[in-house]
Amino acid sequence: MQLLPVPVRRFAAWCAVVLLAAGVGYVAIRLCEELRTAVTPALLALLGTALLRPLHRRLVAAHVQRSLAAGLTCVAVVAVVGGAGYIVVAALIDSGDQIVASLRTAAQDLADHFGAAGTSLDDLAGNARELLGKFGGTAASGVISGVSVVGETIAMAVLALLLVFFFLRDSDRAVTTVRAMVPHRGADTAEAIARRAFGAVEGFMRGTTLIALIDAVCITVGLLVLDVPGAVGLGALVFVGAYIPYLGAFISGAVAVLVALADRGFGIALWALGVVVAVQLLEGHVLQPMVQSRTVQMHPALVLLALTAGASVAGILGLLLAVPLTAAAFGIFHELQGRYAAPAAPSAPDPSTGKSPPPSSPPADS
Image (cartoon, rainbow, N blue to C red; front, side, top):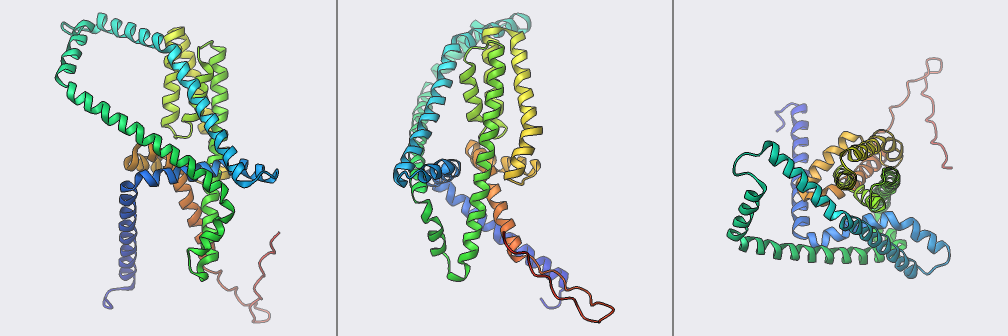
């Protein structure tokens, strides 16, 4: 090894570090995948705690007991999420028949103008019944699997809500817990890293909520002006979907345009599409740079890469968790960089005296 040049040895050392980090990361991802029923609620609970902590702090500052304040915060979350879900489902149910009728009319027009022999709607319906008869067992097993997935999702949601309650109630002990988990010499560094990571996640959730609220209000006003039914429910869907970057906005916007097409026709649907696109452009070019740049310093290209990696690893859940986890990782990196940065080079000696000037003292903390 001593025969190799110094640059080659440094390159080999960095390769070993990268391979070791990649191996540890792969093992961690595999463990999280195997323990997803416990890891997923914990991560979601951390996001919820970062979002709800200001409300909990205000309740505690108003002399509300910590457990009661955490319980009231969780009840408020259930009320808001449940109310938004009810509004969205009610709006979609009210417009469901119209959406189906519009799709059926569009399919009939396509079949009349472009369909060939054997491709009419009656033929398609007959083929569908035949396929359903052949693969009925597979469909039944799929339904059973879907029911189990729904049950698992509900169980994880309940566990996440309980974890939010405990995280909020015991947040004052978090620093003591972190310091107790590491050796005494590294306690200060561990506390600083934890604060920086949680602060990055809290800033991301706060900025995302503000952007989601602005998007929902703008799209709701636009749909009300266009007299689209269920505008409030569609606005609630936009608000919820904004927490899943890009994909949530696409799905909620597509639903709004579809409802407008079903009830108001093609022209109003185009206007609704224009409203959705305008709001998304406002978000991407104005709101995201102004809001998120003050909370999470991440380039849009890095956000896209994080979303792609998250989707490839964990699907929709990966899209939801990719950006806040990346923000936390960058917060940790910046904290370590500030703590272990190389010291400044000594100043050159003064030619008149031949002595180096004394080092300047750091500014006092305000």
